[in-house]
Image (cartoon, rainbow, N blue to C red; front, side, top):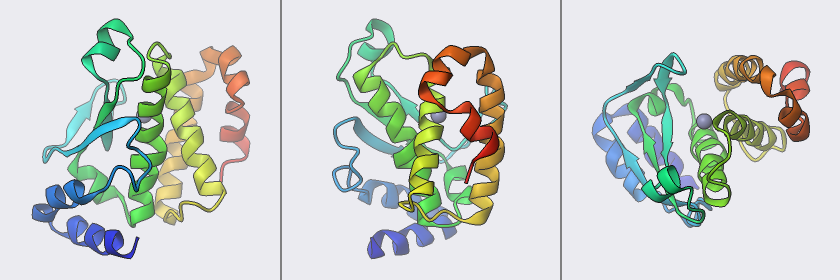
Length: 178
Ligand SMILES: [Zn+2]
């Protein structure tokens, strides 16, 4: 973990180290291997009009999963420059990469037809769990941003009440985050 921390800071500081940093990440070590085929750095930020903001990372499902809902296919995770700019430390970065995008990849692998909003809520819940149980020591500024974006998603997802109750998230998001 020492090595990855050091090379993360280098990549954060200097754009030209980012592709190499992403290529050096070991999917097995990150426990992503089963669900993720590759990690790819794209050096141009991507504005997402659904979300009304820049994507930090994106999980791209396989063609078979997207069009035919075939299970057990692996996704690609795309990482944008803003991921380095908004992550203060390696745990901020891994919170998005492993706990959020990794959860999307796992969901698509296991249940390709899962609703996008439910998948988003599950990913946020997983991030929250790993922060709360101490696995990710994220920065305070990350926590603040995460709190706001989680609330926005909770509000957006209100119409999904039934399934959200099952997942048990809305209350935790609203009253008991971090
Ligand atoms: Zn997401």
